[in-house]
Image (cartoon, rainbow, N blue to C red; front, side, top):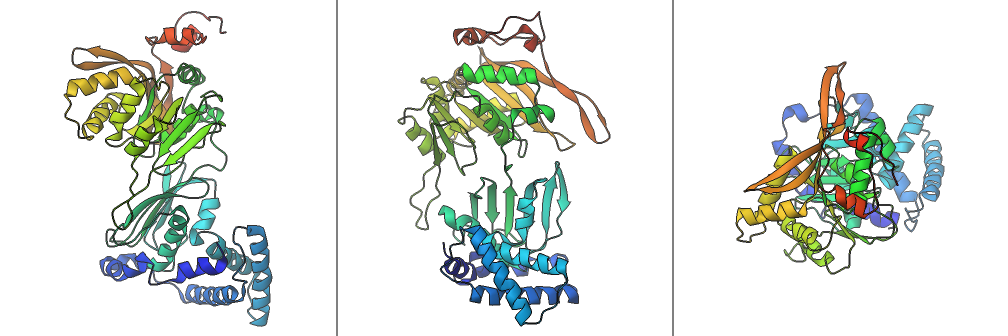
Amino acid sequence: MSILRRLQNDDSNNTNPVQRNSSTARSATSVSQVVQRSPQQSTYQDLKRRVQNKLIATLDPKMDVTKTDDVRSSIRELFEQLLNEENIVLSKPERARMFDQIVAEILGFGPLQPLLEDDSITEIMVNGPTHIYVERKGKLLRAKVTFEDDEHVGRVIERIVAPLGRRIDESQPYVDARLPDGSRVNAIIPPISLVGPVLTIRKFAKNPITVEQLIEWKTLTPQAVDFLKACVKARMNIVISGGTGSGKTTLLNIVSSFIPNDERIVTIENAAELQLRQEHVVTLESRSANIEGKGEVSIRDLVINSLRMRPDRIIVGEIRGGESIDMLQAMNTGHDGSLTTAHSNSPRDTLSRLETMALMAGMDLPVRVIREQVASAVDLIVHEERMRDGTRKVVNITEVAGMEGDVITLTDIFVFEQSGFESGEVLGSLRPTGLRPKFMDRFEAFGIFLSPQIFGVGSSQRRR
């Protein structure tokens, strides 16, 4: 996209949904949410805006913004020239700060750009133009950056969703999207939001998190990793569960990395987030309806379609509705080794959620039939929690052992045992229960032999 087209999109008041709703947002915004700028701040912002507008007018409109190094070099040259022509005197830090902000407005995501480039930040939350928070090491902190107004936030939201073919307006006031690096984005605008445009970005690490890092952070133990690796290679069906922000997608990425490179993998997501490193991967993404209410492609549609794509593995980023019944059917009809995530509070709650979501499909099935489908399809539940100190830990690795009467039986293979809480840190570790899963014969069929010590019993057995 050329600079001219990008700026036309940014400055188009008629097509900016946030500006159309700005009067509603302002009327709903309390006095406490209005930030009074000091005279020095106002002068700096006015100067920055004036320099930025002159710079935009001077730049070649045909310049391709995808060539960031060339564009940045051109901007710097024109920036220095404009300051000299205008006799604008700025200190070296102020000059560098203004240049970085102008570049962020043209090439990046405005005030959010420095936060996106900060690797210590894992989540960014924009609650209107002046209330911006970040998450560092699991703790929420107020950021020192602000937007100019609602329209400024709206332009950044448009810049994120437009390249993906998504839309956000009065008829569709919220949207899920992603940044070029795969980071997850959710935006919601007035009149649904009463505090102005709200933007939530869950950042993905520039370098994918590795198994070694999870072990170092005590999310998993080496024994649990060996067990999960064996489960994936033996084509067990795994559900990764947990609450919001517990790290389910990160763990799904890690577990997916254990899939052999010679298998065909089909991934299905609302917004493509998985970062699989295998060669044979087909990535599918759902689509919301257009302004006429047509053209929607749901997760359920994609799950059904994926069965015709000859997959060795089906990975659904998250099941949250009627698609769960189709996922269970896939697991029960020869697509072993499938992976997905689900929101829940415990392994037992995960089963209840699966039953509830299957009923949402609209099929008039007895609960026992659905329960039998769940017990037959799911082999393992890996439950993760965000602890009170902000760390993420796997707290249960649980086998779905089968049915006893009308109840699905579960067997904990690994359980997190908390030993204390000191200096703001949760103490404890993920320990084996001493029980072996019933599917050990599957491991042997695939030539996988785990040491009994992994399960906390016996002496070391030769691994082949």
